[in-house]
Image (tube, rainbow, N blue to C red; front, side, top):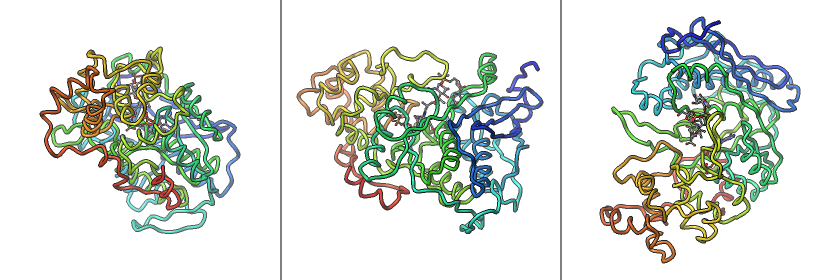
Length: 460
Ligand SMILES: CC(=O)N[C@H]1[C@@H](OP(=O)(O)OP(=O)(O)OC[C@H]2O[C@@H](n3ccc(=O)[nH]c3=O)[C@H](O)[C@@H]2O)O[C@H](CO)[C@@H](O)[C@@H]1O[C@H](C)C(=O)N[C@@H](C)C(=O)N[C@@H](CCC(=O)O)C(=O)O
Ligand SMILES: Nc1ncnc2c1ncn2[C@@H]1O[C@H](COP(=O)(O)OP(=O)(O)OP(=O)(O)O)[C@@H](O)[C@H]1O
C-alpha cells in the first residue's frame, strides 16, 4: 500500500492492540492508509494468572491509547477514532489532557493550536478499560476497580542519568524489594542498571518503521511525552511479572512550564510533572488495578536537591550520563558520554558543581564547561538571562542562578570564565527575592509516597 500523507488525513485510528508470546503489538492508521505497528517485547514473560487477565487487558489498551501520541502527531487530524475498545469520560478526559499538554512543545514549534482539536470519543456509563473480575471497590467517581493480589515489589525505571540512580540508593537503604527496569536497547542504561546491583529487567520497544518513512516524507514531527509512554509500558510489565509499585524519579522542578505561549503553559517535561503523575496514578487505581502504586520518589525535591544526593556517592561516576544525545533511536550519538554542548550537559555540570570536589566533576565530564566562553549562551538560557529556559529536562531558572551564585563565592570556581562573567554582568541585575541554595534543598511540595519511604527520602 502506498504511503498516504498524514497531514491530509481526516482521522487517526486506534485499530487494535494484541498480545502474545511476550510481545505487545499496538496498531494505528491514518484513514485507510497502511498500518503503523509498534512492538513492545517483554522478555521471558510468564503465563498470565487468571486473576490478572482483566487488569492486563485494561493496561494493554491504556498503553495502546497513550503510545498513539507518537503517531497521531504526524498529522494531527481532526477526528480520533477508537476501534479497539470503548472508553469512559474519565479516560477520555485524561487522554485529552495528555495529548494537549504532552504535545504542547510540538504544537509551539510547529505553530499549531491544538486546543479544541483533540477530542477522544467516550461512551457515557461505559465502565472503561476494565472488566468486573476480582475483589471490587469503588472510588469517589463511582468507577469500580479490582485489587489483583500483586506482591510487594517495586519496579524502578532507569534512565541512564543521575535521578533514577538516586532513587535506587534510597530504595536500597529502605530495604525495598526492587528491580531495575529499562526500556529500549541503550548500552549506557544497561551499564547503570548493572551497577545498581539490583535484579534487572530490559523491555524492548520498536517504533513502527513507517513513522520514520512518514518523517522523511515531511510529516509533522516534534517532541512527545515519552514518560507517559514509558509509564504505560511499565504498568503492563508490573501486572505481567508481578510488582505492586512503579517508582519514577521525577523531581518537583519538572512541573514548571518552560514558557507560556498564547495563554498556555508549555512544559517540555509535562509527563514528568505532577499533573500527569496525579492523573495517571488515579486512572491506574480506578481502571486497572487498585493495588498497583505509581509515584515519583523524588517529587518533593528540586533538581539541586537531587544533585546534592547524587554527589554523596561516586558509585556511578564512570557509567552514568544525563546527556540525551546518547538516547537517540536514529540520530548520531556523541563519541563521549557527555557531549558537553547541550542544555542537559550544561545544567548537570552546574547543578553538581556546588556539591562535589572540582577534580571529581572535571573527571566525570572530561572538561570544565564553566571555563569555556563558547558556552555562555547555553548557560544564559539556563539562568533565564536574555533567553527562556531551554526545551530540555533542566531545572528552573532560579535553581541555576542559586547554583551559580554559590560558585561565585568559591575560590576554586570564581575565576572560571562563565562564573566570572556571572559575577560581573548577571548577578548585579538579580532582584532581592532570589532563593538561596539552602532554601532550594528543602523537601517540600506535593507528593504521593508510601509512608515507609518518607523517612528514607528525608535521611538520604
Ligand atoms: C533522544 C531524544 O532526545 N530524542 C528526541 C529527538 O529525536 P530525534 O529525531 O533526534 O531522534 P530519535 O530519538 O532517534 O527519534 C527519531 C524519531 O522517532 C520519533 N519518536 C521517537 C521516540 C518516541 O517515543 N516517539 C517518537 O515519535 C520522533 O518522530 C523522532 O523524530 O527529537 C524528537 C523531536 O523533538 C523528540 O521527540 C525525541 O525525544 C524522544 C521521544 C525522547 O525519548 N526524549 C527524551 C530524552 C526526553 O525528551 N525526555 C524528556 C521528558 C519528556 C516527558 O514529558 O516525558 C525529558 O527528559 O525532559
Ligand atoms: N529508557 C528508559 N527506560 C525506563 N525509564 C526511563 C527511560 N528513560 C527515562 N526513564 C525514566 O524517566 C524518568 C525521567 O527521566 P530523566 O532523564 O529525567 O531521569 P534520569 O535519566 O534518571 O536522570 P537525568 O535527569 O540526570 O537524566 C526517570 O524516572 C527515568 O528513570
